[in-house]
Length: 125
Image (cartoon, rainbow, N blue to C red; front, top):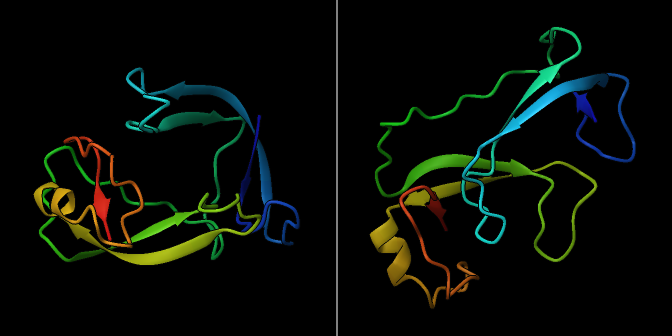
C-alpha cells in the first residue's frame, strides 16, 4: 500500500506529492463496515514525513471533547455522494448534537433517514 502526501488529486499527482510505502496498518478493531463507525486506521510509513506548505498534520478531537450545536468544522475527503471523486474535496459544516440530528430526519441535507446516530458518530448538516 502507498500513500500520497501533498496531493489533492488521485489521478494527477502534483510536483509537491510525496509517495511513501505503508509498512503496517492498524485499524480500529470495532470498525463496522455497514455503519462506517470507528473508520480510522494508524499507518506506519516507510520514512518520516517532512511537513511542507502542502503536507500538514491534522488535529483530532480528544475522547472527552464536547461540540456544541453549530460548532463549525471541516469535512475533507474524496467523497462518495454519487461517485467517488478523483479530487480531494472540503466542506465547512456545522456540527449538531445527536438529539437534534435525529429530529432532522426529514431535512434534505440529511440523506440517511433510517440511520441510527450512535455516540461514536458525529452528525453534521
